Length: 408
Length: 209
Image (cartoon, each protein chain N blue to C red):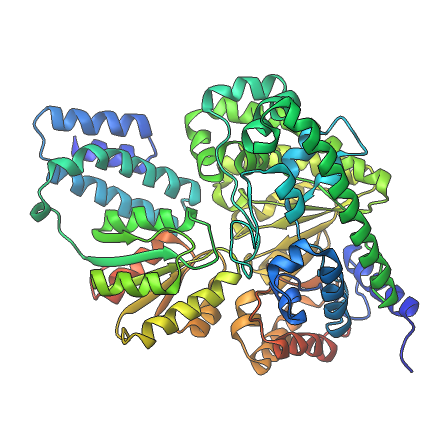
């Protein structure tokens, strides 16, 4: 007999929580796939998916129904909005709401950070974060002195055409609030549909790494890396100054019931261990520890190759959260972190796009043999965004392979 | 002085190396020799990266130092004085607007002696085809960061084939490419780092790496 949605959700949640708590679940949890494929599978454009919430919710429902992963990563489209979270970090009710900037919000802001389909990009292109340079090197002192004031008062008017005068800004903030409310109402609808389909509630907040704020939103990714060599003391002090507002922002998610917090990293793979340990890790570590102390387990996405920095994770308390790897070899990572951190990742997106069902089955079988023992592992795509052309049979093959080889 | 300059570049002394390169020319040093030192230094940086001693940050700064020195060295050189390994037509594929990976690769490819025709980002298939017809390169380099770029690479490969440009060597690069993506796209080689990418380009042309 088929399981009721409640039973299914309970089973899935227990599976994921066991892995996070470094135990062996009944079966290896399989984290969901999302990305362009969700819209493509429903036959709508990326533009429609980004701008028409009714169509997006229907597309997400169809995807969740047909691809039963243990969590659903098919969600409404939004791009990193953390600079706005920093600007509003004195306001617990507003700051977390701006974690993601959707297409309609991008229109309201008239910002230079994002590129959306049907706007700057083709209707079938993926929305993309571009970032840029919005701060000069001689402004580091202002940033260090008053990070929130500098971001709110100087950076945002530069980065958003609709915030460039106080009068325009008044209208823009009101309009943004109205867009947020539409977004949260659609997100609520997805929550309802998820429960109906047996997906467990997984209340997830957000966090960010202080140096990534400077790279992504203030100086540009390439430029901040050069700044580290050119103005090391300033960069360090700026990352330190941003740590408090970011920690506050991350902790506000507690009031919204978050039990986990996603922290996606960007500059980690750019830096040598020496630079990572000096400019990046101490501030990120502070954010992680504060969340952990407040009962929120961070899910840190270590983008790219994190091999050189693996040992630093051991500085965190045992069971601190989830270490999600993109290109780091998860077999090696699991050996290093066994009994200390829940390890997540393992499925290269290239395999899902370019492989065959047979290759996928073989790959999953071999991988699980290595990483299953002892539990504490969540199987996930290295990067969760599957392109439009991802073969549907490959996603089914992935789910079936875990069903076949995933049980303990 | 050449050895000192080489060391300064490899050790990431941006200010010091640019200053020394200028002094070298002021004292009557040959621009051709200066170019050679910079090339050797970039090669050494790439090698250190491949060994895991250097990271992306060093590739970025290395590329920056090279560009800064070339700004005042290249105008002093006649075209005949710069040896050319081959030509690469390079671009980030359609619907992807990311450029960092492409730009790092470009700096190292130029340093290695390749002429690079940079088509920019979000480059449609037909623009690659046009550029290949015009420049007759030895290699086409396609870059992408987002996963959607994987499909664009495949379409570009097909467009080149459909236009009868079958024989051209294709290398793909970027954060999300791997062996499976290479097979899916039908490329000749792949790399997810610039240093290895340049080495592979040399190998594709049968030049000693």
